[in-house]
Image 1 (tube, rainbow, N blue to C red):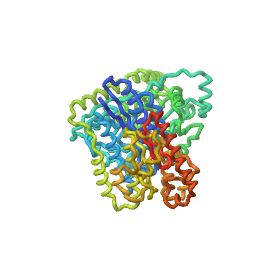
Image 2 (image 1 turned 135 degrees about the vertical axis):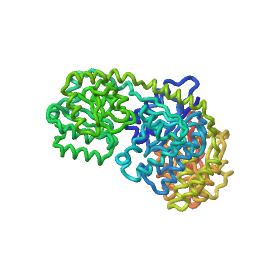
Image 3 (image 1 turned 90 degrees about the horizontal axis):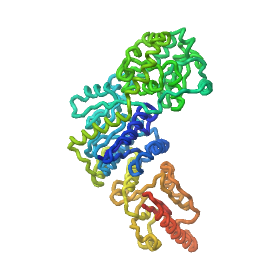
Image 4 (image 1 turned 60 degrees about the vertical axis):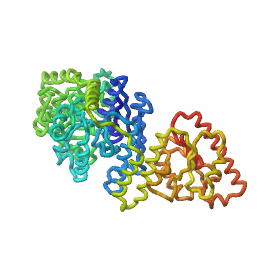
Length: 609
């Protein structure tokens, strides 16, 4: 069975939160538990260089390069702010990107597509069977925003975005839910839909474990984080639903506890900055002295976080709602004494009534903290529960459940993934463009989408081809250019394209094989005699955005515009021709040792190996 897992969720904010941990661990364990007949492809995009590298580091040694499928996104989506914009230009751009994603997936003809996280605000181009049918599943973390709109969907923009995702989600064939609580929620919300809903549970990686630290290591750690007393720990992200304000108020009300303990709050790398300010302001209003009675820390490495879990006197998780509750499980695996709210899925995780409190009552939170820290028998009971309970959760078992339900779904599904043609793609693309033809910068939008498709198309070409860019040339005939090519590349197919053409901008360029753009893994040689040309300047800017390696040459360009070339002396023209010949010979030698499919641009000549 061939399945494709869309891991674009690891390229946005979710990567730094519980969802990121979940996806990474589940995928690794699905790879480890697959049978010999199973094949996994991982799909990601190129919008952010840092997340690209991270994905390669995580999975590059687990699957072959051919099984890492990268989507090249439009240039404008390199800018993070574009993901938040709701103007017509951006809506069209995102629709075209969704179309492109499905087009690329269709080429692979997977038996099943698994979306690692569907509700992603940034960094992911996602859709479910908009343009072609395939058996599709989604990992479901929660539907809490539907149950608590006021706190979790605080403005109309966010609410509209969230609910716009619900109808497409109904086209899923399978939900893999991270807890029984979420599965039950999903069954109620989608009771009228023909979706198989299964719980595969959650686990925590083996990294989170009990560690015996030396006295010196503890002293160094405490000094690093200015910890002067035994500490009560919270980590798990900053959102309104995390209920951190109630924790601060509960702690502030415990005079004796404040004297003996310090409250340590890990804010996280990504969170609500306004809420962060509110929390610090609240601590001040509650007369909690920062660094003496309460400590706020933005981000802590995994190694230090593991030490935090191991050394904390108490871990408190006051969340109003969770899909599962991964951070309490991590703390339990590290042997921490863990108390949590009694809401949503958290009883599934902790499994002990004595370790629970009512998150809507500050008094309940403060009483539980006080009881646990002053009652030695209760403290021991809860602490001993942690390692026993955490052993019940296994990534291997979660991965095996995922495989089981996926295979069952494929077996009974009547959907067969069929590659849809380039003509169909163009027709669908034209429909999208027709909806937005009156918007400002329409021409720029079309160019961006065309260039993006052309590059993605190029990754699936297997014939060795030399692309000769004639976009800045009017007089030199094709035959005259071909005569310049050395015999060493006679085995290549020759094609003429227009990269920077001002003629025929639009959908036609796709059908004629025009508009080829390189990306950061390729090399481009540009000529300084063309730098006064606006098209070249814009082109260079696009190359920079794609992180393309390009080099300036000092010779005069054979394929410049007619005026530039005509101004050259006879000697310079001969030098340009000679340089061109030598350049082609050099690159034809490189092609023989190249192991990757790539385009190489030299003097506006593209070579696709």
